[in-house]
Length: 205
Image 1 (tube, helix red, strand yellow):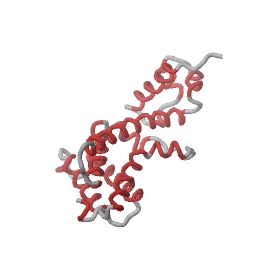
Image 2: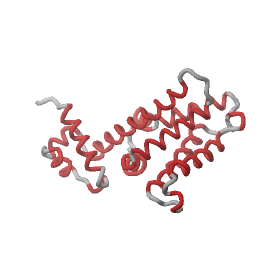
Image 3: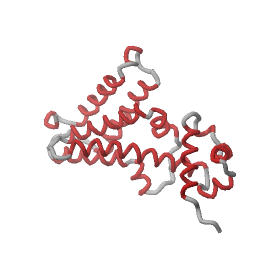
Image 4: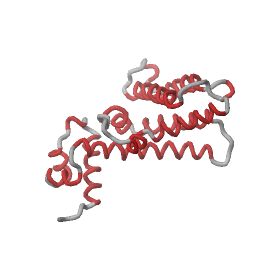
């Protein structure tokens, strides 16, 4: 029995992602993926037992990219200086916004294109929500310091991300008033202000 080839597994992921840049997940079958990779469907199934497993792997890869981008931005601000939890959370939200605007198709896939992995374990769930957990920790820090309004940190952060994504999507899909189509940064900054105001007290500025 031949051992799996990690390079071929990487090719399958990369070629599938290329297909996803122009087509919706439901429009792509395993035969399409196999043809794009120059292999048989049976070979693809040797590495991923279903299309859902392959798409979940790609989703996780892209989330890892996004999480690194966000974590690096927050870490750079935190390093060597004393900054508030509010400023760190704003940096994280700004990084999420910037990653989405720089990678609009990937952002659309990650935020709404892939079906949720309802049967994943806690370890995978924590990986899916790594940045949310990071942000929730910042809110907990602010609560401990008396700088945040009483709230459920995870709920507050989840709502902020959902609201900010809605603003980002309005910019990407031109679903806002036309006067804001070319003012995406201003539009999303206003949404971040609203979200942060709902979480932090005046002491958290």
